[in-house]
Length: 344
Image (cartoon, helix red, strand yellow):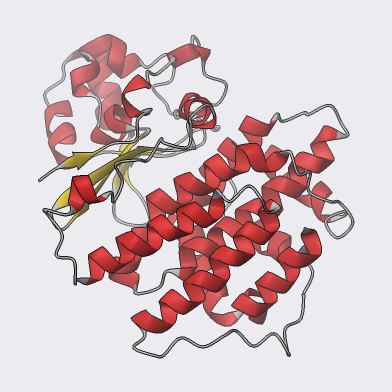
């Protein structure tokens, strides 16, 4: 099975206590069964503390619960007591792997970094247009994927979507609109229907306030993030997203495409991933424009990184997004395109 990486992947190295938003902050830490089994053998005060703090969460998963927004093993020097006490090789799989994400498909595995890590976000924001050159390219995958199967179809559609995102002759909002329109046609084919032109005669913009309202209803870890969303919502309909934001956001959008588009192999819906990008663009772009007037209390990288950490890494938030996409008329493809055209 081939392993496929973006060209920046292997340059990542954790910066530990120099990180401005540690992965030890805000999250519960998942414990895999093999690691917890080893933890039963750890002696001394550290072993006692590990066993005392391991618990079962509401989903039935074994975790170390965040306490006061901190992993209980994240010490005052912002270093890990488990790493220090028994070594990196005995970290849980979650801690050892993050922000590395491995996605197994039939015949190949794609590897990517998560934007929720500040250092990974910095690396991705510095990446070039060829960062994902090997993702779905004929040279990498042709020998592993039958050219007539569903995965091959999705790989070609993903590549076309990425090219639309990088069409810098258009304002970024129009690029997103093009991605929506193209993937509406793709979705018709997936549904076994003949693609038809979108009918814009009844399209109506719902404004962007409903998108902020939805995000404020999500599971939110940081009160600072909740406050930022609430403040920007008050001005969301009047603030114009800066065009220079596109230079950074397109890296975030490409990350989403290569991280989530192929989930359609299971969900059967390619529009989920594009609508998630539209939501992220409106929320982070509006926040960026507002913060630019305030000399950036969150800089641009941190806005994108925090969005990823707050929204993307919550199962409940992902389910809530998909449910809204299915039920809220504001998320109809034609209505989202109308909204994006207003923003351009």
